[in-house]
Length: 201
Image 1 (spheres, one colour):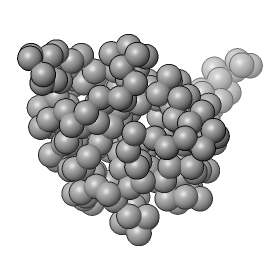
Image 2 (cartoon, rainbow, N blue to C red):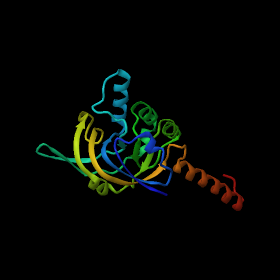
Image 3 (cartoon, one colour):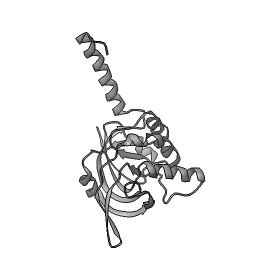
């Protein structure tokens, strides 16, 4: 296990240094995107419309933050991760088209995303669920908010962060997926237990 501290924009070369079980801290620009923001960004891409900012080299946080506004300034109150499997239907195209380098969330992602990460150079950083206040402390400012018409949780919040983490690298860009490994081991152990008990699954 190694510990890395990267500042955005992060290069593909930097990302390919990471391996499953490494720890990453991200500084610089990060943005939130859940289902609706992913969907809209990809629609913009297909229509040839520019996004509000270049996503290349950035970290995307699967998060619907709680945000308050005082006068003309937004502040993140809590920023817990959203379950990432909800974005599985979008993430491979998102990585391919926008060259994001770090996907942050909880619960892991599937085969399509793992393959896209290996091909284009991206990783999945697992952030602890229930640590929304810890996440908010690493967010130094809200640089902007886009697509607020989608609602506060679904909008794209553009954030300035400092050593956001720790992020456990659970999917790397070498085809390794910690979540799939655990599932496979559980299944293998389950079969052994059934055999010992003389049961059939």
